[in-house]
Length: 238
Image 1 (tube, rainbow, N blue to C red):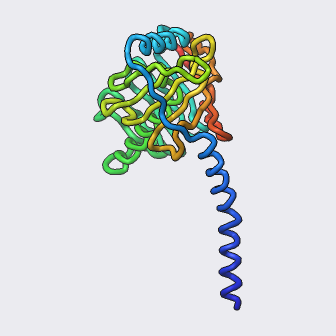
Image 2 (image 1 turned 90 degrees about the horizontal axis):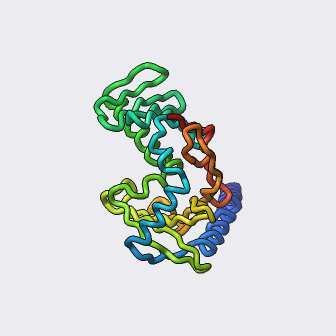
Image 3 (image 1 turned 30 degrees about the vertical axis):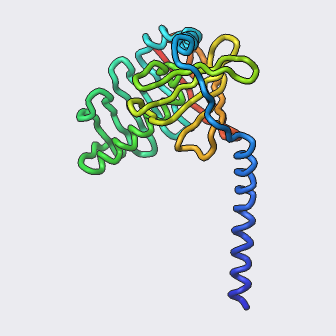
């Protein structure tokens, strides 16, 4: 009898904690999930991309040599952009990434240099962090990177949006992102179709822009549903 009672309690607890999550996911799925839109490649799509870069002061970004930020108060970055180097640190780990020559990358634990398999693990982890977190800081500036297909999409309200599809040659293969703009031409929202997300077309905000010391515009934070993505104290200098 005691065993049956214990099993009933365990099952009850599982249902109590998981059912709200399932209901919430179901609500979000049916509310937000949508098919990827169709668009047209060509000059009009590229013109919209150039308009986005102009609105963000792309020239100032190109001249920005140093960028510093913290992703979700977990991963810290000091990026020497002009030298293709970035210091990444989290917890007790630090990796001095050389983005041009990986053989010169160094890894540390508690400020002590490590080598061998441990170093490879930390370097791979830091590289993954850099790739993911930098997307949330600089993705619009990379719209003309190799392997990105650009398509002009007309929204239901008649506004023009830009669909960026990453091919096998790009950093995020098979992922697609729809940039939605404010009246000035700056990104305001981003809809995402990626293998990392269970919901297609999930939306993230891109409207919290700051002007750095170098003149480049960079986002200070994002929000996805009820989740916030804070970029910390964002700095950009020449």
